[in-house]
Length: 186
Ligand SMILES: *[C@@H]1O[C@H](CO)[C@@H](O)[C@H](O)[C@H]1NC(C)=O
Ligand SMILES: *[C@@H]1O[C@H](CO)[C@@H](O)[C@H](O)[C@H]1NC(C)=O
Image 1 (cartoon, rainbow, N blue to C red):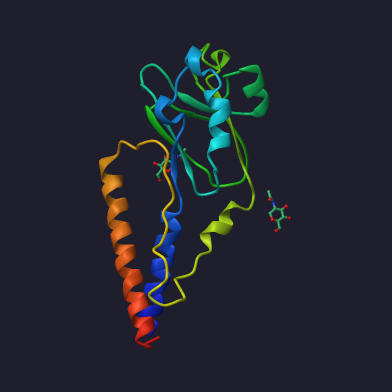
Image 2: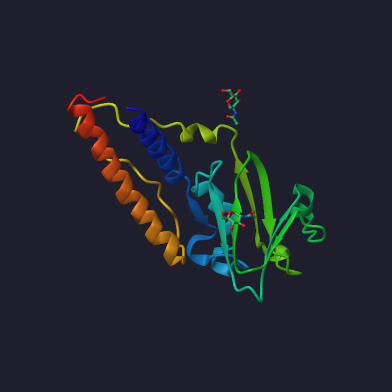
């Protein structure tokens, strides 16, 4: 019985992890100066993505030509790129949302901010409620666990395959749980 509880706790913790998503900023356009046909891309993007605590922002760009910096609201408005809060230039930068609030990003390259390569993300305070999840309580009719939609592709082979492995494990573990439940062993 004790082992089973450990198993369920493990299951729930894995499920909580799976619920966090990585969002590629700009989707197919990635991170760069907006093209004239899509000038509003970074204004629209946050409105189309329900970002919450635990999610990560993925900035993809050519490392030698661009960068991403986190700045204050004032610096964002005035395009002041000096003294950023955070500076990343490796070409595929992850920003992890760990607390609620407003997050302002632009490029660390002179002139890019003025050409609308900037984005303001607002994260609500109660997003972490999604972490609370319980194993299915009903019989075999319990629906399959749902997974978050990840917008844009993430070019990391390893994480893709481990995501699938976790999904398979999760399905198997859920099946075992339901089996034990149905057989009255819990
Ligand atoms: C976000 O998390 C990833 C993976 O844990 C890590 O590689 C990355 O450096 C983090 N980003 C920041 C800005 O701390
Ligand atoms: C979060 O929840 C608390 C209490 O339930 C509430 O007072 C607060 O306004 C909520 N915050 C947001 C951003 O929804």
